[in-house]
Length: 583
Image 1 (tube, rainbow, N blue to C red):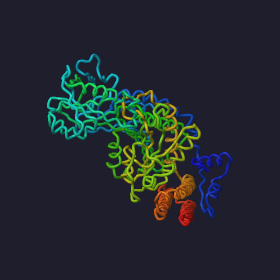
Image 2: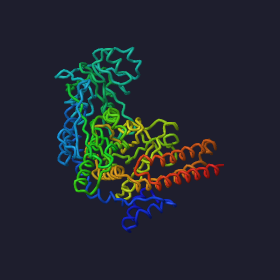
Image 3: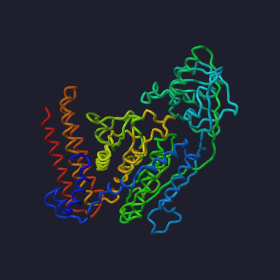
Image 4: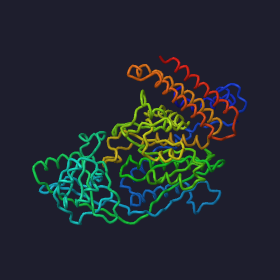
């Protein structure tokens, strides 16, 4: 049975009226306990409701703004979410009664630094008739946290440096430094030596800069409440024109940057559907608001909002119960999620799963790349081979002690694969890489993974606009993410048995795949011991993943306990057979 087959089994069981006792018997022999629960087909319930329209409309609104914590666009997004939640039936915490189960709150915190937002910017080579760059068409040109120039702009000579060492030999006081490198390498020295500002170009190859000549990937300076330094990031086209002019001799530029810096407060918005039986146990979805783009991450904001609205509707219509709490969090990437996890130790103990939605709406026919589920750390992040491939984001090679074995990986993959088969939608995975809201969950030893797209040729650029977003993709991601969540918050013995079966199947497939890769690896210099180590690592990962099913904590069904033990023994036996066959 392929990934996603568990739900298909459930569907047959419901359709044919087979009682859960037979389900239990199909998973193991000697079943001594069973449940009378009949599993729901959550896909059949969610698919008619989740259209992607609200997700798309929200994305369209949010992407109009360069969102920085505390600024106009960020705060308007928070209040749009709040209005939508209220319309869907969520009640503001301070107005909620004890019996109200749908609630939301806006958390407000003081900021150590002022917020920032861009107003306008232009860059022109002196003596030329037309600007090199205008923020009207390249809104990412202004470095985040840049100060304003004088209202009428500034005219200054450009000094090109090809290495950081050039700053020691060239006079840059009162001038503009141009470099084809990251500003992090020379920013402090440029400020110290009196430069007015910087012009930089360092677009990575995955942006295909020679094709997407006008794209600018946004860059940032450290926060400066009282400073007057500024930066402009260049497109490939602008960089080439500037270099051509510099080859002719002394070059001056006219720069006009207008930005706003002002005191503000940090907003985070959290919505809950309180569980009826285990309210202290929860699933947390997290989508960050900040960034200037549409796919990054207005799509995550919008998709999560439609998920919250759809969940509320299904709850109000009594179509679905919520045994555990389902939480939706929107805020500042990583920071808001980490704080949510760390600031309340009692709440932290009840967070059972975390799912991050980041760049989830791409029209891949335009952007390139594919939808990805970034797995929790498993052995593919140590030995990346065969079907496993890192994205161009890349990740460090992990160690065995970094592994996070858990059923969440294969459960989410199976659920999304089912939606993929239904909608003819490509779903792939990548080994753990980090860098988004799933990371704080993992750092706190909470199972967490990332839903995203990569490689996107418009990632972090000012060409990441609504025309690169697909409502169909939003619908597919949101549907599968919500179905996954509904199964988790309502998980019981039937769910646990299904995960045992799925994990055993996936373990066998993985072990066999790794064994098939070994002959070629041995020819290329690997050793028998290393190949055995790889198989043993996957054996250990899956045995522990199956053991993690105990964290559901239902009624401690003896059938579940037996199924877990039997599956673990079978995986160990399979692993031993494959290792013995290695030559």
